[in-house]
Length: 430
Image (cartoon, rainbow, N blue to C red; front, top):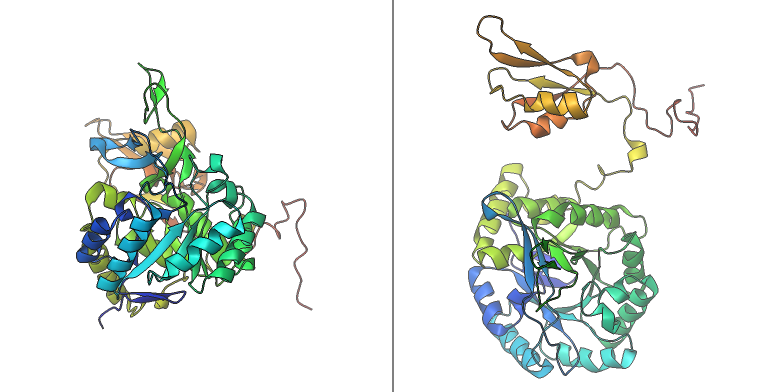
């Protein structure tokens, strides 16, 4: 059965869950039209603000590279739109009229005074846009003006501004959360209390990616100085997934629609966010690095995977991983795995041995054939704690696997463990 990728996200419909995030790729009609032609299901228009518009500096980007100059992390110090409000509103109106089946959400950032929001919201609504996203996450440039992360880090402000938007607009309100906070659940709860229809996360993370050691200045460099920026790209995906999961499983925010953002490069990344409760995903860095056509693989890959699993719609697997995500104290203390090395696949590099011998549990033996001097490695079962460091360091996929062991012991978590000085008493059968 063919998979249906269409979604209805808090009342906003689009033909697929792949939206472009509020960023340079969505800063003008030309870009958005090209994105829709490539197949994106929606866009969040680059953040609008008060006039006169923000003024950007040059340069604006820096990166962390992997092998072959693959960009692992991306840093930017670009601000919200540097074009006038009137031009943006006219372009949003024209694009929505030309592409009625695609989602257009307008990102907004304004001072923390109600009259600013009361003034702009009717203008945005008049464009025909499908919703608004409140940018409470930008970590650079705007917080100095009392906006962006300066709002997102204070739950009371999040609730207040969200309530203003619900008061002055009929459009769905999505609150974009900053990751630069101790507990992501607090602003999410505040957004819900303020009437938010959904939340989106994560926005970028405060960062300095690197230092030019010749000039002794961070990158990107503006003249002879630099500043912290917003970090995004592949490297932030684990942080984003965790924060999405925290909101999805929190008793106070469970069921609140989530738009997942952070390090989404392909269909599998998107599927992981959806499995943790996201109803749609937003992409930025991958599109900036590889162009709009990446959405073709994303859509095709997600549809093929869904069909292989028997999922007809995204709702069939959205949130399926949430019940399996818990606090550490509820993990099974009696569950055990040990490493197994496939000797036929092993190339004898010894990386597993070095990692285990030097930094782990000395659970791998190095064997040398007395005749050929060939090396081989074998797990010492009674020393293996199942940490899976060896599996991670092995350069050959599936050469080392972690094999569950029959312990004969029932489930027991840390709150029940007698080794825990604060263990709870486990009820016994009468």
